Amino acid sequence: MTVTLRRAAHWHRPLMVFVSTMAALAVVTTVGIVADPRVLTGAPIWLKPFKFAVSFVLYGGTLAWMLSLLPRRSRVAERAVTVIVAVAVIEMVVIVAQVVRGQTSHFNDSSPLNTALFAIMGAAIMVLFVAHLVLGIVLLIRRIPDRVANRAVGWGLGLSALGMLAAVPMTLPIQDPGIEGISGAHSVGVVDGGPGLPVLGWSTTGGDLRIGHFVGLHALQALPILAIVLSRFATRLDERTRARLVVVAGTAYGVLTVLLTWQALRGQPLLRPDALTLAAVAALAVATATAAGLVLARRRRPELALAA
Image (cartoon, rainbow, N blue to C red; front, side):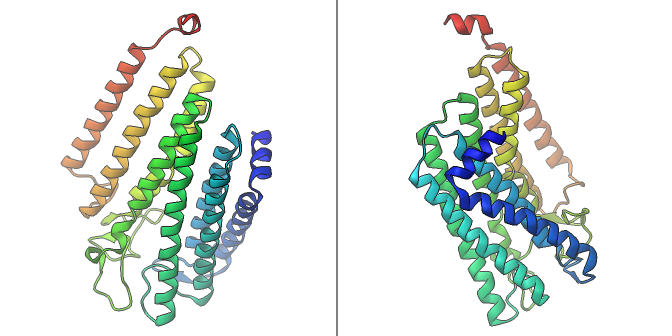
């Protein structure tokens, strides 16, 4: 892992500098959460930049690892990552600046400046999304030699793009809370800033679109971790079987992301699912288990795979 990260740092130093800066910012914002008594929309004012800093550490670190898997360097991939770093910096500068000003960074139309800053953030995220897709296409075309890792990276990048799209409803007219100066909302059926889960802040009284957004984004880490676990501990399975299991997991993960977003759009708290939601989760679990079972039933023994 250390060698891999050193290779990534050599290939794209700005990305690793950004990751290091976000790690330092996470520490600073942790101090802010403890030392600054200000509260905004029902949460410590420094909690949002803390969560974004941690998220960017994970995102940037994972991209660095993925770049290191390429058989040779790609200028297009490196430029796409450079764009991602640039717009992520813009995003974080706005978020931190708004905290310093005592203002919300998202959905804030209370003044021309706040409206402009939110518009800048929206444009930055759109550019990041496009650069993310470009990176995904390059990684798929270049084909990482390890089949299991290739599937995990491809599905991880695709599903994290789906997670980004899961945030779109937050800004649609249906999410207009009818409050002057506010143009969108995370919560559905209740006002933002109400009772929520610790740290995460997800609403416990209504739907919350951040849940599907969060789950989808972190497919970028979840599927590569699954691939690593399978490659290390499921050595009795041949490479093709492990790759197929990653595809099964990726499909289930994508359906879960959509299901969580659907649950939120119905104004339903995560921990209070109705019968329809429970039935959908049960169907997903059965379908996933069945698909995994079929993949394992068709697996080849290592010695037969070698002979073939």
